[in-house]
Length: 267
Image (cartoon, rainbow, N blue to C red):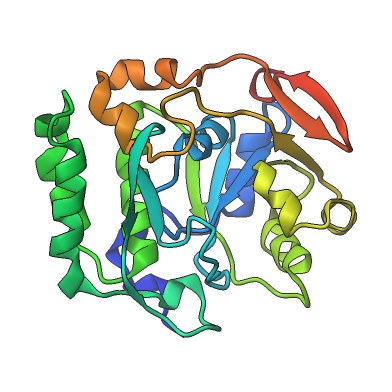
C-alpha cells in the first residue's frame, strides 16, 4: 500500500489527534463531515465544509466505479450549458482511492477542455496560473483533489480544519465509515443526501454513539450540478459563498427522519 507520509500534499493534514479534538469540542458539539477525494466537488461539498469543525478526507476508501456518479469527473460550466471534465486514471476494480493514478499524458487535453469552458469568465485570468500549476503537479487523483480543496478553502476564507482519516476496518461500508470516525468520540456527522444510498444510519449511530444529520441544501441555479469553479470564476472571492447561499445561519437537516433547523456551530 502506498504510504500517505510520502506525499508532500499532507503537510498539516494528518489525522486529528485527541488533544485537538478536545479543543474543538470545548465550545460545543463537534461537527464532522467526510469526503472521498475523487475529483473537485460541487458547491454542496463546500456547504458541508463551511458548517463543520472538521472535514475528514478519506483516501483509503475503495474507488467506486459507477458511470452515473461523479467519480474522477465533474460537470463544468453552468446548469443549463455544461460538459463533463473527466480525468483518466489507472486503477484496478478493487483498489483504494489512494492507489488511483492519473494518466498524466492526457492532462493537457483536459486542461484545454477546462480552458475552453471558463476562459470567458470574469476571474479566469486571475486564477488561471495557480489553477494550472495545481492541475499539472500531481500523479495521484486524491492528491490533486485535496490540493484543489485546500486552495479553494483558503480563497473562500473557510476556517474548517481538514484532516486525513485513518484506514478503515469492517465488513461493510457502514462499519468502515464508523471505524474511521470513531476516534472523534460522540459527534454530529453532517452527511450529504447521497449517504442514504450506502450508509445504514441506525447501525452507524449505534456503532459510534453519534448523530447523523443529513443536509438538505441544494446549491442555487445555475450552480446546482456543476463544479465550484463556476461561481469562483464568476464572482469576487468574497461574494462566492454569498451567491451560493452559504452563510453562518441555522441549517436544515434531517435527523431520524424528521427535518430540523439547527445552529450547530453557534449553539
